[in-house]
Image (tube, rainbow, N blue to C red; front, side, top):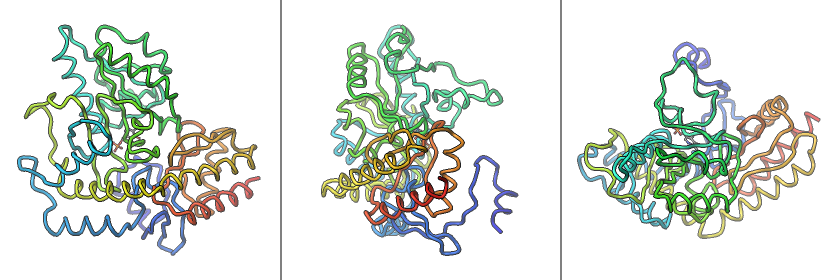
Length: 394
Ligand SMILES: *Cc1c(COP(=O)(O)O)cnc(C)c1O
């Protein structure tokens, strides 16, 4: 019934699957008929503390009863606390600007880089190098920053200047010219196919850029907030970027974006802003999510989960060589490289029919981003359903 309303009244930008979810409990979703689904997607890495999380719901309710919004012209206590918490958990002496999405956080990062280039060099440095198969957002600027030609549709042109794309990390060195100010990368490409980069290569690049006085922007919209197993993938890679962006999992589903930088004095009033960014509701939600996940990590439960998840991936990979060539990723950001794109589409559909939600990424990667709080039982049940789906296809 709502399918027709959706099609009549909502603009057609998503290849939607018309299941009507009514409720969620941790990594399990229930549709209107009461059928349950194990959620290996957390809504593309967003529902980091699971669905229906009581602590998050209570924090949001309490905050909503008091204050949802004033404006950034006044102090916002949970915003200040969340900024401090981000610095503490990352271990980086950084200050944060709050936005409402990943793309917006990346817009902020690009503005910081451009101002830095203007302020610190005699010639105008404004160019930003990104990587092929990257994904940085859907605004006109961040879609241009995205290194996938298929996203640069001509009907939306003209796009802003100042972006170029390299095939891999090694090629970046040759592409840096006198107008380059920054390199912007994901440490594990998410949309591009759950592709982690080599630690040493990243550390060498970070060191090189630092020596040249150029900026390293790490887009942690997907990898951040414990998705990689550490608070930031930058922590896992043992680098200290100049700018880090966060969004997806940060407030457990409440819209939020954040750009952190160690160049704390870069902006002055009027340089940047947002009506909704950093409001009481989203930052209070962010604080609760970080509290939940910090203790989850410290208790060892997060590490246990991703090691257990990894075991299951190895098993499936070994048992179904006709479908999968390898498993990829880290933490709870995982994937299977599939034989071909067509088979992948069929597997995603078969999993759905068995009551398991998984995602596609890149051309041939089956992607899994379960809630970080997924239980062992849910992991078992999810892979059981995946096995049924694969057996059905065999
Ligand atoms: C999802 C994503 C974005 C875009 O975030 P939105 O909230 O959709 O704007 C940017 N970068 C990366 C790495 C992402 O995964």
